[in-house]
Image (cartoon, rainbow, N blue to C red; front, side, top):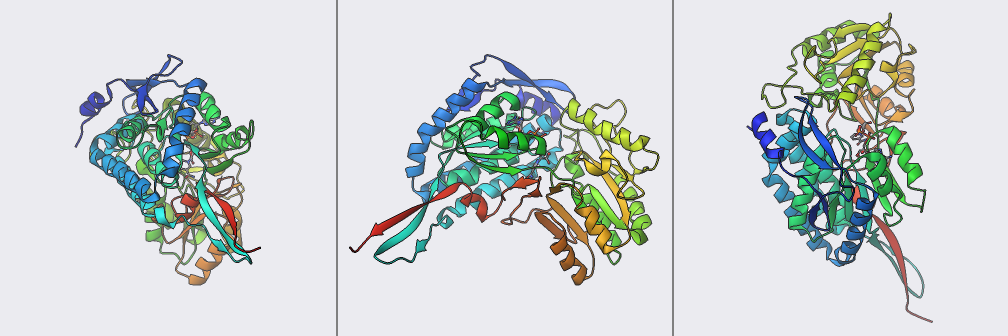
Length: 490
Ligand code: NAD
C-alpha cells in the first residue's frame, strides 16, 4: 500500500510533454502547478502547452501515421498488448499518481488501472474484426476497406485520469491511427506517464501527449486541419464548443461523451432494499460522485418514499470521507477548489430552498479542504424549480423526488435535455420493458446501476453525446470505408 509520503516522492520530479517519442517542455516555456486535492499542496509542475506544441505533436503524429497505418493489424494489436502489459506492470505507481493528483481513494484507482488494461486488451483482440464488406455487382468486384483517419485528437476529463488516458488509446491505435492526447489540466500526471511508457514500447510519434489549458491546447487540437477525427469526453458545455471549433477550418468527425443528470426510478413493486443499494452504488460516491453515469435523480414512488429515504440515510451515514491513501477511506477529495466551491454552492442553494429537505449529509466537511460528505436532498415534486434537480453537479449530491404514476415517472425522467444513463427498479417484467422503451437514455440498467458491461456500447442521447464507446462500434468509429471497384469484364 503506497503512502501519501511515497506518492509525493513519486511525483516530485520533472514532467514533460511527450511528442515524437521525446519528453519535452512546452515551447511557451510556461508551467502549471499540480495541486493534490487531498492536501491542497503543490506536488509537481507540468508544461503549460501552447498552440505551437499542438502543431508539433500533430506533425509528429502525422509522420508516424504513414508507417503505423501500413503496419499489419495483428502487429498493431501486439504492440497495444505490450502497452497494456507495461501499464499493468506499473499498476501501483499509476494508481498512486491518480490518487494524489485526483483525490480519489487509492483502492479505487487501482481498479481504474485494471479497467484500462482490460480495455486495451479488448481492442487489441478486435484487430481482425474491423472488416469491410463485398457488394454484389456485375462485371467486377466491389468491396470496402476500413481505413484509418490518420491523426486522432483525444481529449479526456479529470474524473478517471489514467483510465481515460490509457483506455481511449486502444480503439484508435488498433484501427491504424496515431493519437494526440490532451488530458485535463487538473489531472495530467498519469497521462504523461502513459506517454512515457508509450514512447518506450511504440514507434515514436504514435502516441503524443500535450498538457495545458483547454482553451489553448484543446482549442488548437480540435481546430487543427490535420486532425480529421476528434474524440472528446467531458462536459456538455465544452462538447458544444468543440462541435463549433471542429468546423472552424475544415470539417471533421467528432464523437462526444458528455454529462448526465441521470434518473434512478423506483417503481412501487421494487425491492426497496435493493433499490437503496443500487442508488448508493449509482451515485459513484467512491469517486466523490464525479462520474458521468451517476444516477443523481432518484424518482421514488410515493408509497416507498419513507423506506427509501431511511435506507439512504443509513447507508450514507457510515461513509468514511478522508485521506485517499487510507485503506479505510470510502470517499476522497473533490478534484479542485473551483469544483469544490461549485458543488458547495449547489448544496447551499438546496439547503436554502424552503421546500427541500436534507435527508442525510451536510455538504462540505468543515476545515478539511476539498472534502464533501454524501448529501441527499428531497424535493416535494419534480416541477420544483431548483438547480439541484436540473443541473449536473458532478459531486456527491443526490436529489430525491416522489411520483405517483408510471407516466409521471417517465415524464420526469425525460424532462431534461440529457440522456446518458437510467436505472429502473421493478419486479415487473412488463414495467421494466415499458420503461426501457419509454426512457430516453443511451444506457439503461434494470435492477442494477453504475456498472459498465464489457463490450456493451456506452454513450448518450440528446445533449449527453454523439456516438458510442467501449464496444465494437468504437473501433469502427476510428475508420472510414474506402470503396474499391475492380472491373473484370468489358
Ligand atoms: P471539461 O469539459 O471541463 O474538460 C474536459 C477536457 O476538455 C479537459 O481536458 C479540458 O482541458 C478540455 N477543454 C476545455 N475547454 C476546451 C476547449 N475549448 N476545446 C477543447 N478542449 C477543451 O470536463 P471535466 O470537468 O474535465 O469533466 C467532467 C465532465 O465530463 C462532466 O460533465 C462529466 O459528465 C463528463 N464526463 C462524461 C463521460 C462520458 O463517458 N459520457 C465520462 C467522464 C466524464
